[in-house]
Image (tube, rainbow, N blue to C red):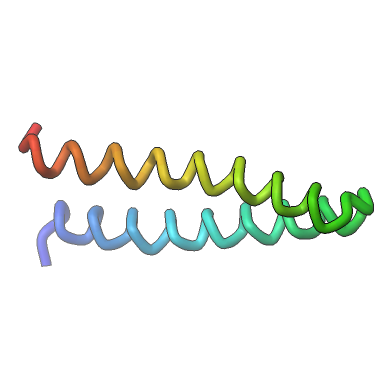
Length: 66
């Protein structure tokens, strides 16, 4: 396994773990702040938009071959 292959696999694993951790943090924040159902949904939509933007950027970079 080359260094670049290891780096790519490690990045995907750790980014997935980071996204899951951020999801837990948002869920915990919404429970502790008693945000209610609507507030929790809004928090996750905002988090999801950030994650979605990262995924779209990654896909576009791969498609464009940069």
